[in-house]
Length: 136
Image (tube, rainbow, N blue to C red; front, side, top):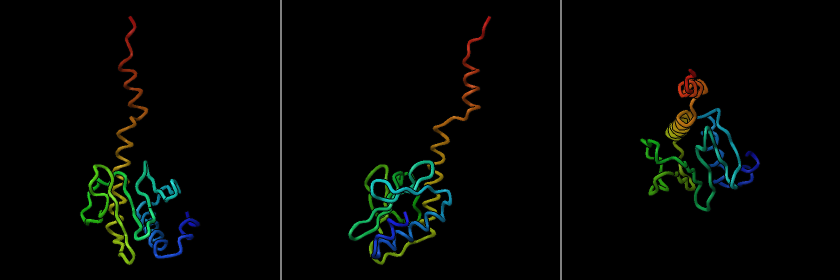
């Protein structure tokens, strides 16, 4: 990830590096990967991606429509039912506090989704015992 970001030699590389720092501070357990030619940050599912465009650095939250955004950071991809994004044009100020809150909300959403999707082993065992036919 370091080499990919360092290769971006203008304001977009600096912006992406700052976003990365905020994401890593917001969630020390975040997993970073370079997928689809972009940085991807995950925790029990994708939290967000970082995309480089000519006039902006975009941070896309695949499940952003399900997140509260009291600071109004989302300014792109607002029309869909699932994702939301934040475009950072040249000179844009990054609200680290609001972005941290958004990252933590995305972690909570992913963690809750994972917990709902996978019953514990104890629950599986008790279900199996409850459905076993009794022998006579």
